Image (cartoon, rainbow, N blue to C red; front, side, top):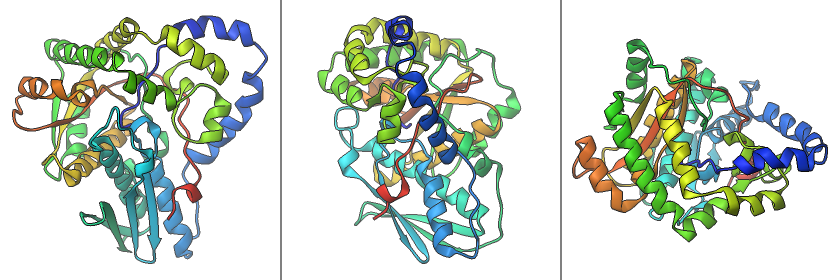
Length: 366
């Protein structure tokens, strides 16, 4: 997710249910719930139908997180290979001007596909094709293995809510570190209170900069789906209820957004979120290029799936890496001068929120 921003809606939470009681919520709930059941599940396909298996692998890949839930990917299916291509029509130039998050998202999708392939009796080997800006994933027969990370795919979500504040055990932290290891990606764990508070300072500075950037705010607003019916219709974007906000008519959401989405409100929310988290993980890739960003996405997705398997929630706090002016000082704080911190992720135990939706397969196939 990979950047998925909760928008402030305290006023909507108080006023909208009274204003619109019985108007839209009952009408749109069943289609949304049906869409969730159809999407966030383990499938059952005939292993003898190779085409159906490959389509199912793509379905699992699309359950990965992406920046603003833009689903900025396209998939090409061939008999022995699946190609993941960037969908540049879905890029976010304000928050992601160099397409960093876009290629991280492709890495997340690839990691899901690799685990799904093994569960369906296929080994998947991914390599980056620099000439096409694409990930090419070769498939060949292998022993079937449904790993815990594969089992966690339909349960994973970016949970933008308050956590319970309890620390994780040493065993859980080591499991998360093992999951994230590989491909030259470094994961830095911040567990003590001073480090969390210092990270919060960077988050607040970055959030304040973004909140005063009209292009950023306009872009974020364009990807918000205020009602369940809007979320079902588009199949993408940031559904308000997935951030703990009420589902309201789009016109009301757009009106209230400008009133309640404030710098102070967002900064206060992030303070609560950081202080209720068990720890923060920062991912630093092997290189600041597309292949390196894909490696970060794969490492993060393994981390998120392992967290899900442990009953641990995750959410992004990427302001310190999205605001370019902050990156050098944040890197210095982390002790990685000269390298680019790629992702900032808080984690801990917390509630389950309504999941986001995805577009149909035919919309992402080439």
